[in-house]
Image 1 (cartoon, rainbow, N blue to C red):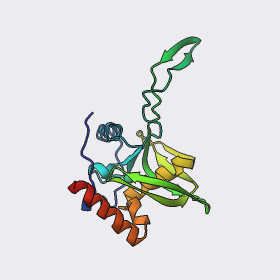
Image 2 (cartoon, protein in one colour):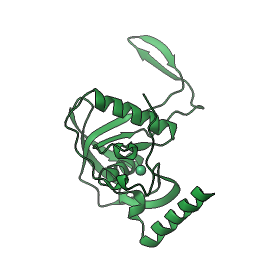
Image 3 (cartoon, rainbow, N blue to C red):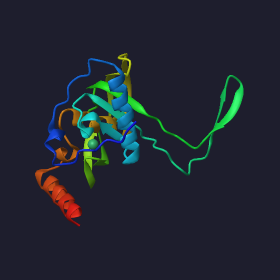
Image 4 (cartoon, helix red, strand yellow):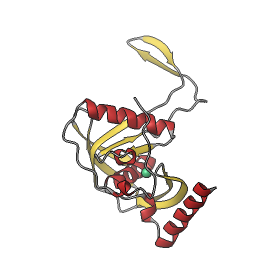
Length: 187
Ligand code: NI
């Protein structure tokens, strides 16, 4: 596994429309492993392949990155009780995701993005949706999304179309955000 460089605005590659994945091979697995390592290292809760410069329709999400203060997890397999270290990672991979049935009702979250560091802003998105996607073996799935997961996957899916969360803001707010980022970089 390797940590890859995360592209940041105004890198023009972030505006790329990503291509569907057609081959489910070791190269795809390595990409996904690297994306998780890069996302956990950043740290962030979601990453699209184009953010590491790969224009493929692949997303990784983990709304539960490791919490060092989390108590150990007790579990039981085949009647055998044991305790896991305090990890609560819930890694999710979405290949060729498609949103269906977005709700009319909107939810507002303060969003951020590893490609737009240090900038946070409220964005309205459909509160729930369904997502059709493939896993690393190419199997098809469909899943209902709500809450932070619905917002996160819609944010990540935007990346596949070359759209950033700041593109949902008014022009004035977007310009203010980019100026703030310039100032932070200069400091
Ligand atoms: Ni993002």
